[in-house]
Length: 256
Ligand code: DAK
Image (cartoon, rainbow, N blue to C red; front, side):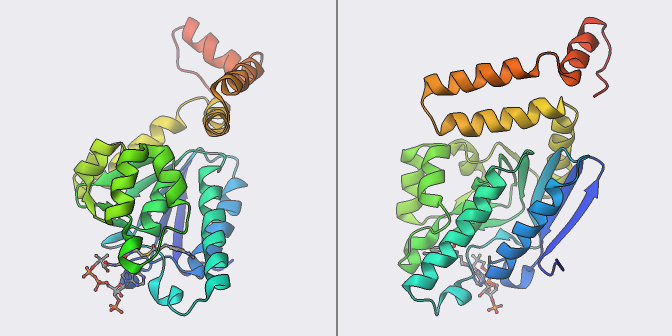
């Protein structure tokens, strides 16, 4: 696919995707979702890749669903627009590798849902988060009413969803929505540092861990434990785990 909105580069084990529609505050339109869908498929075929970082160009990570595109929709089209976004953000959440959102600015509405679908959020001190759909007489359409309460707890999610207030990065950090806040100029450095840390770990273990966390959260604690034990056991005897344990016992770095 030819990409007009997404730019990406692969540097060793880390891919960086930049949403680049700054004149419209990176508002999420149908084209964005088609491109993201296709790019994720493309990146999933790159066997050398370990981590994906997503950021935005300009003042926004993404200022929400494209309000201009939504303006003429009827109920059926609205539902289809919502389903498309949900599917792509689910694809990010279930992408086989960890995905880090490097939130450079506004992450509002669909933009906040986009960041929430990533595994980790690192924010610029200039970032702002919010779910302002109610200001438009709407509710979130990309799983925000479902993912946000599961991610940060119902009370803080209710606050964001019902008030439509935008909060700064420090407050988002307090809520657990953001894992780290850094000076704006250091955002990509910090996100890439985190990506490289993850990339240096056992690659199959990291992939299996993401699957175990995600699948476990969808089931009961007991079933999640069964899942963990099965996945834990499946690593024994593999080349990677054998190498990791041998490296520890011989006081050397593992060569994955
Ligand atoms: N959509 C389309 N264009 C947008 C946009 C958006 N979400 N946000 C900004 N823009 C455009 C502006 O219209 C403006 O375009 P021009 O006038 O230059 O042509 C340009 O980006 C620059 O924006 P501003 O001039 O407003 O820039 P400021 O720095 O003054 O303000 C801002 C930045 C991010 C605070 C402000 O633009 C803003 O408040 N934007 C809207 C934020 C917002 O309300 N986001 C939530 C969108 S609703 C559903 C599916 C999805 C959803 C819900 C339901 N179903 C299908 C049921 C999700 C909904 C949302 O995400």
